[in-house]
Length: 203
Length: 251
Image 1 (cartoon, rainbow over the protein chains, first blue to last red):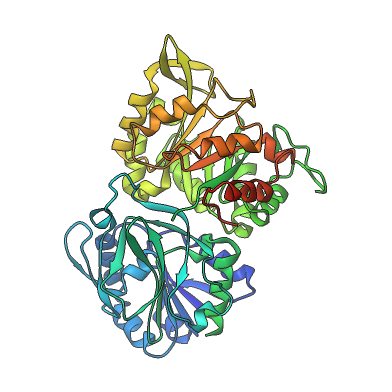
Image 2: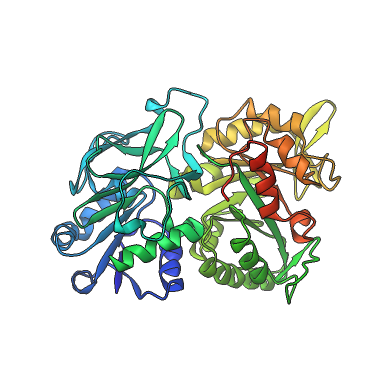
């Protein structure tokens, strides 16, 4: 069973539908027991970092997620990936879970071409930097769907794939041990996204 | 780099897709769930569902269709039509929409844009506008293009983006249905004023029209209905054609 962490942020409908479409058993939950029982955990998220982190803290699940991430694969998606990092500078400075080294910063301030639109929204091709079982069914250069204004940086060690936006290599996929993150939405990335989720389920 | 997007739009009335639905090879040609399934696997980058139902009964049918579509479609889904309140946003988002498009509802109450952006994020709020030239001005129309609001459309767009709209669909009433190409001067005027993604709508009649559209760097996506529904233009062929002409496309 794959547990999708429910902490009152975002729309979890498409994520659970995509897992179900793959024939996987998925459960949207905030129960400690279910997170412990799950074979894998997905941490979703949309919106602003500070608000989402406060909501996640309020559930009391953070220590559980930390413990379980040492035992089983965990995947953060979009803001859920950003939460895995040490800190974010979105509207102030906020501490993240610290499961992956690096910070989350404003994309706009790093873009040399100020005419480029932010949010970085739409389909961008994913360049695979380092092979990983997560890419078992995904090829280099496939397109994935992004919607975000902040991005993870100073995380070269953990970066598995990037998407180029102007002069910025946007961190697309990270891994640190059992902990994975995708800045894009696999559940909205068509067939390529479904194949990535299938590989996650088979890790 | 980001790919340009090709977006089919499905106008749904009382549970059926209306406007140019001569799908060949599909069993039930005007069934919105069948059509969404077809587009999901035939290269569409996003889908727009527009509810043109008037009755409450039709609206319930629409939400049920949305739920079925969202459970099977793994590309972004935008929903519009009859969105006036935060409750309307909530209703369609719970059915699996990723973005919500507001048009006449925002004209009646502009505060809905900011309120929705604060609650769901800018990326969720799409400002859709129907625009027509009147006395040398780009004029904003309401109620499906029936009422001249007297509002300058470009000013309206700037206000909308300022309030939190994350994307704009510009439908030119002047080129809509004419099939002679998108309204490039109108789109350029908008691109010069706002920094959010712009989806061009109204006027697509052939593949060349999209090639022309994407020579304008400020435009992110092209939306059309009947040319896709009638299979006059196949989306995969269109995207290959555009890529051959140097346009970044997801294939």
